[in-house]
Length: 501
Image (cartoon, helix red, strand yellow):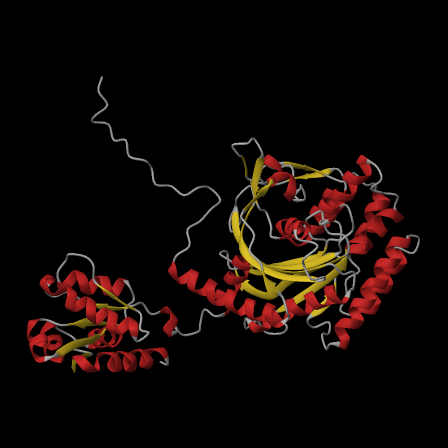
């Protein structure tokens, strides 16, 4: 039987866990990126771009959700049978780059980078498999001033973006402080079982904001089943050990010295724990010396960071203001950035210790927060579409194109209508493009060296107050006749009026 009559069209569908991004959001994204870049440049970081794909062994297996397919990454096999993976962050590619170029790079090497990263994770509400990060890293120094500086960078970035002091906080902790707690309760990474327990504890604490104390207690013990029925195996600690870990987690305070004294007592028997407390005190002194108090940057024992490669101080940037959720309840955006010290990542390639520290902004999540903060601000000129030159006579296309080029050469965003429809569809097109005005030149205007300039924004306001079609025709709202030679000046005046409205 013939299939000629069968509808064989391909279904238009978006890949699960991904999303399309449209013009308005892209423009907000670009403006935010420009602001972040300016702060990073001011701190002396240099740009670097690395490819989206890396060889899988170069990326390493450091993701927190290694139980997901392919250890949380998207992988393909090259024609030489080598496995490549899409980068899951911007730090692992940096480590590869530094290792390849180690001898010629200045040390410390300071770079920033932005781009998409990919996680082969279970998608959910506001949880996508592709998202954008913006990183700054210092590679090649053990100086704790580099860690303190990144905390300052985070605070300065938020304030440059218009987030007020008090609406954010940069939280600081130390991975080795928790190692000291684990050592004090007899959990060491010297065996496979000890390493598993350590990682399970790190992951449990990292989920405190999302799961609360009850969820963390379950993950420190036998494990937890989520709403979908998936079971996550816990660390398997006994009740006494869990009590110590939870006392550590509860040690956070706005008084840095009081909080550090509390955790110092918990790790008194651990050399590595005592050293971590000393590091945090030194960073705290550097921050306070530069004028950054606990209202912006403070110690928080619950900050762990999910990636396994962190080895020292870790930090997390969190938005503290509340918004109304879909159900009317108050919710917070929470963490929108983080980072820490990763002294062993480059060593995987070179066989020698290369200390490093970095900070990463989650661009998409931060952009959503900024959109909420600025939702009541008036629309600016950046949101206006192009000036549209209407085509009244197709035989005169070269003339209309010349008008468009005149506007473009004057720095005005403009386009000629490229469809084949008449006047009404062209006007409708201009409205959909959010055009501030249209340029109209029929045969009469052409003969007189004139142009009709129609202000669509003012026209819409006037039309809303006009009662009938006859009145509209008599009023011809916001439509003026100008000399063709005055086109650029008149359009500039119109744009300036709306940009400053």
